[in-house]
Length: 203
Image 1: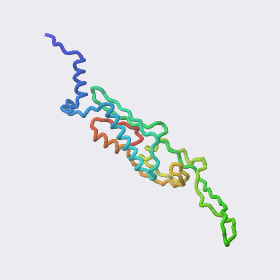
Image 2 (image 1 turned 90 degrees about the vertical axis):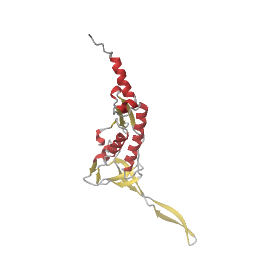
Image 3 (image 1 turned 30 degrees about the vertical axis):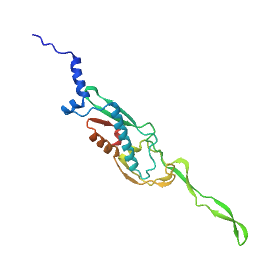
Image 4 (image 1 turned 180 degrees about the horizontal axis):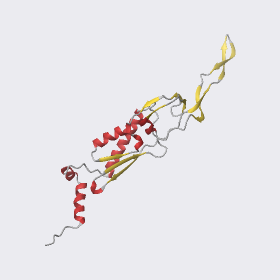
C-alpha cells in the first residue's frame, strides 16, 4: 500500500510557522524572530553606541562623525537567520593628516595719550598658528581601523589641525582599542540569534 505524503508546501508552511512564531520558537529553544523594522531599530541603537564609544576613545572628543552609519538588515526565511550589517559611506571614516603649520604674528599701532600727549605705540600681537595647505602625510582612510589596531611612530609628528583649531603634537604611541567588537558583543548578547557584521579591520 503506497503512502501518500503531503506536498512540499505543507512542510514549508510548518517551517514558516516555526520561523515566525515566537511562542513556537521558544518551545523549540530557538531565538526570538525579529521583523526587519525591529532589526533596523536595534542596528540604529547599536550605531549610536558605536559612535559614543568612538568619541570616548578620542583625545579631543569634539571630532565626531558627520553622516553616521548605514544600517542594513536581512532575515533568512525559515532558517531564522537575522543579520544586521553596519557600514559607513565612502570617506566618512577618512581623516586628513596634520597640515604643516606656520606661526603668524604681526604688530599693530595704537594711539595712546602719555603725559597729555598722543603717541603711537607699537603693540606686538600674541600670534597664532595656521595651516600652510600642505599636509604632513597622506592621512588615513579608516579612523576606526587606526583606533582598533593602534600605532607607533618612528618620529614625532605635529602640525595644524583644522578640526580642533590649533597646533598639536600627535602622541608617539597609541595602544589599540577594539571598541566596535565590544559594542557588537553586547548587542549580540542582548538579542540572541541576531548576527552582526562589520568590516574586519575594525577588530
